[in-house]
Image (cartoon, rainbow, N blue to C red; front, side, top):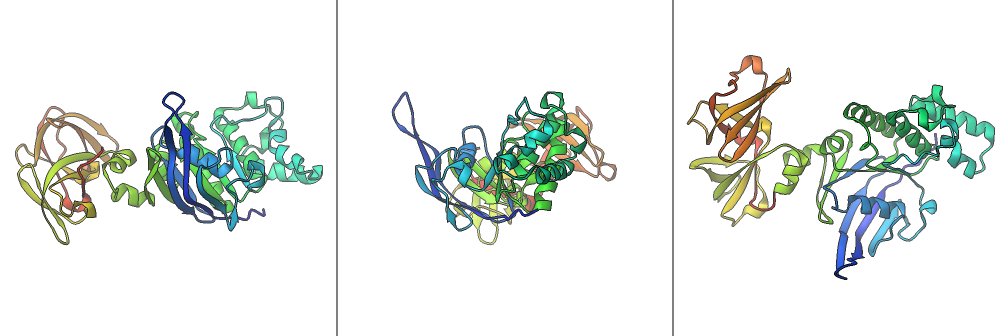
Length: 365
């Protein structure tokens, strides 16, 4: 296979629409600036309306930017039509031709390129084998499951050997088990081919499991770019922390900052080694606690008392839900056989491990 992966570069790209009611400008994408390295899979993650799909469509050429430049490799493709961009797109709706069987759907792009039929046949069967559908080549799309249809759409996009593969929420129509299977399949195929890929989703599990890096967007702006580990462990603000995973926030007063951030949480002093630089000079903060950073103690010994409402046994861990005056808090109890597990209905106190938390600005959550 001759896929020649190329980088994707967005330079201060914006997309502005006119609000039909107010007539005001709306920034669907505001100053997007990033590079996807050749062979890298990057996920655009964020809530509905954050601009992630518009960004992907501008890379594909289905939308033109109001400002900025888009490059694939060294080539400026900002205003090129989609068929001149060396990209292929996998849509949420699959987009298969119902009157064609699996073979003909996958062969469609090659026939447009006037490839000889013998070569088409060999190549289609090779790509169908790659997605595990070579035995279903003659089957119509109507007789395929959702997961099988998505595999056909993926093979059809890959077979034209694009420099960049674009995927717009391709798994959102599948059930949970199929989504998990297809995530692994997409990751395996992308890495085996070494193709550059941009993937849009609002599903944090999808983003965490697929990506080399994640671009988190909110209200048209890029909020943070990093590896899954970075955005989970070191979010830049409370929005990213809450969107990327389960979290509890404890309001705190900033006492001092040097090599650590000293905070007062409900009358108890903690030194947190990880903190936002924006807290320098600030009076208040939020202590971000993931479920695995929280601990359970007897009543009165932690920072917040509560009562266990539910224990969910997961084998390697137990998820304990605690009702408190700050709302329900999820605590992950690892290796439950070696630790005390508080039963449902028991009074407890919640605390946290400072090294596993981060002090963030007291802003949007």
